[in-house]
Length: 207
Image 1 (cartoon, rainbow, N blue to C red):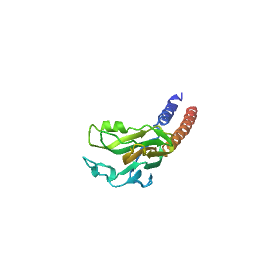
Image 2 (cartoon, rainbow, N blue to C red; image 1 turned 90 degrees about the vertical axis):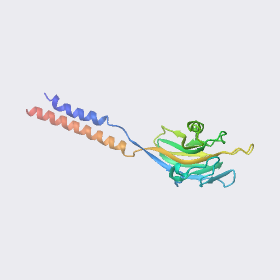
Image 3 (cartoon, rainbow, N blue to C red; image 1 turned 30 degrees about the horizontal axis):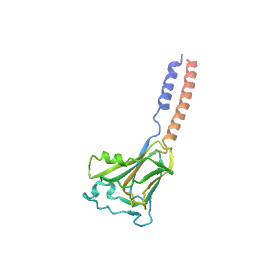
Image 4 (cartoon, one colour; image 1 turned 90 degrees about the horizontal axis):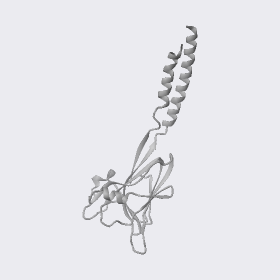
């Protein structure tokens, strides 16, 4: 019988076929990265500032923010990032005020998404300033290129306006060669199995 010779080949096939799928990596984009596009008309109702704002009663600690920089947006100021990946997270510095400003909106590929700004305030547990505040998260995106947009708001009727401080953005990207490598390994394992089976049958006939 040659079944004992063929068995190891099938075991090899099973192990390789059920190898883990594509791995992923996280890309961190600081607010000062040039891949983030900031737009504003420069008026009081639409402006970006790169200096760390002076907040009362407690100033922002520059050592607590990513890379020591932030972008502060007011009014209809807008930030956008084109990225390739399957998920994305946005982190703000949040002054924990009792009255929230008009909140900015987040959209992926032109579709407005729910944010976590209020929850991030609550997660701050009463801190005067919340650092590394996860204000937006989107996962399970199709593996491809997407556009994140963060847009402030300004109301001429009551004068309410958005004020928000971007610290950094983090997105998840699939390793580009993981799937192809796995497919190659499976293909090679199939070929090796067939060769092993043929050799086992041939040797069995000689014995």
